View (tube, helix red, strand yellow):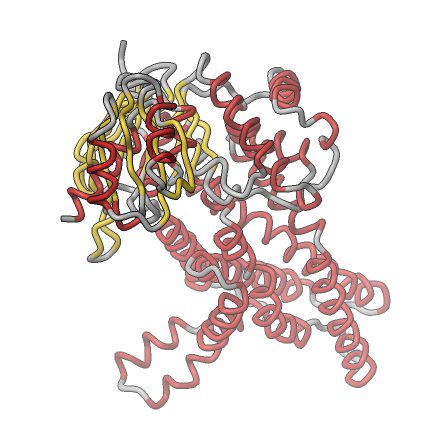
Length: 233
Length: 306
């Protein structure tokens, strides 16, 4: 723990001192604000379901930009050697980067809470789906951050890390579309791997432990793989 | 006294490529051990194994009694490491960086400020303490890297090619620093420049193609009677026949293709130089080689090449 806090502090500083985090948050909030306002004026329903799906789509694009530099930059600059030859564990390094990135993403998601407040002030929304939608977004973000972290640990090229993460994220988002064309056993596997299939219940107000388990276990698996990718070979 | 480093049969493969081949050596307390060898001889790989960045394919290594694989965390807490290209977090200020590295090394708030002040003073970093590392010259970056390695008073300092990219004045300063530090801790330092190692190390391990050819104690052989000369376009037979006629001068080692001769001049090195000039040879370079290291290096690498 004594070694972990300085690692976390360094990652938070690196993320919040760079303009990238603020640009990403600004772009995300602008697009979401535009979408929220437009939809609200058109259909006049006190709901955030469309915001949750659009946010999820944007997270698939924006999270890889946050995570691409985490290890790729350190590997390229050689500072990974400095870090891993200090008396710290790989798990501490991975966890510090994961938590710092999650802090940025959760701050970004939390700022959209303003839309909920607006709905509450001028209407009477059903709060259940709003709460579950935010839980879903946080869980989806967790899986995407862990995935981006793993890919970043495998390369020293940030652009490669970002593109591969976006590719895998989109594939995992839409992989259930392929399911109907597959034999029955494979169909079930593909659906169970789909981010969209597990996110949809959260966005629509249904909480299933299986969906929760999917996001938690996929996050843990990806963090484990990131540690393996860093492991001293 | 227990050695600080004990490496036994260290072997490292990168895929199918053998980088380090059954290397065994030790480093004693307050000793400067030099790893000498051409580029690609396995020096940096050995350091990366000792510092826990890489795992050996086989063999064992320990730092201050801790195995670098099974007790990696404890072993790493006993050493400070300056990698070859001096990687630093360039977006940090010098003071921020030292604070971060100090905390990572487990220094608490009570000990950290004094520890930072000490290394800042020792490495003369006071004037750049609040500057961004990205604004520093190569020489200052090297000092910052050494400063972070000294935080927490490690028992072992690991320096990979510490004089690379430094100007002559900085090289002399680095050399002096290594000499001073060796009074307090053990140092393992790599270089492909023989003269550098010769000036700072107590013992030298000579490596070629991943193999340890010899461990040589410096200062033990032929002090002050040997010199290295480089002759321009000279026929080896002519050089030998001329020097054979000069009393007290003999050829210890010769690499005729490079025009390099290691001479022993029992009555003082001036005799040999005078004899060569009088013999009409174009003496292009002369240097003292008091330790006999160059001679040994040439002999070993040539023998290994054959």
